[in-house]
Image 1 (cartoon, helix red, strand yellow):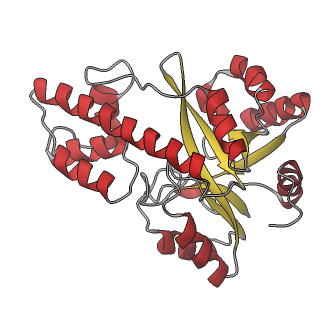
Image 2 (tube, helix red, strand yellow; image 1 turned 90 degrees about the vertical axis):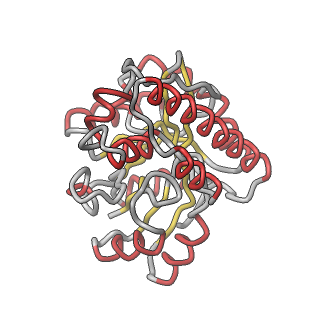
Length: 275
């Protein structure tokens, strides 16, 4: 199994890098990529742990682009995680996350549902990339909601009272920065995005792949994006999008990902001969 969509505590995952590698090894994953949100903080540690465990490793990231005030997640692979331009770009991304979460916290306070924003900011200072899932957990801790789903459905989800639209780079800019760092870009979980109308422009901007295989894609959706990728002449990627939760996407871990032949095509697209 080849899983190219995994998260650690460097963003919104629950497992530390070494824990994730150990769990991947136990699940029978042979090649893995950590794709934390707007950060490569875990890449060196995961790479070292994967090598020690005999697992293949691909440097990865999940960068948030914005189109019409809506998040477009773009996966990046095979890039230089120490590239200076990429590092500066990601620092701006994380700073914007802080701005947005502070605005969300302000709205929650105005609603009489304050959260501990200082803890969130400390997570940012430690190099983690913070996002709304952390706000949801802060809401649970404060006793305002019972679970993450309720937090999004009632308070911080799109269109809800404490929701703050994201600002940021467009998809073409994100594809360009990944390319600048020597990598290739793949559109994350397009079946959840449901904006196939954006794909042609993204391909023209250099999009190299579609994430056809994902934990929340059923077989029909997977086939749809395999066909779209073939039509555009691009590769496909895939992964569980596992964050370490005891239930959500757990069943996909070790079962959803790429086959060896499709991974070879992705390698070829990236100009790589071996993992």
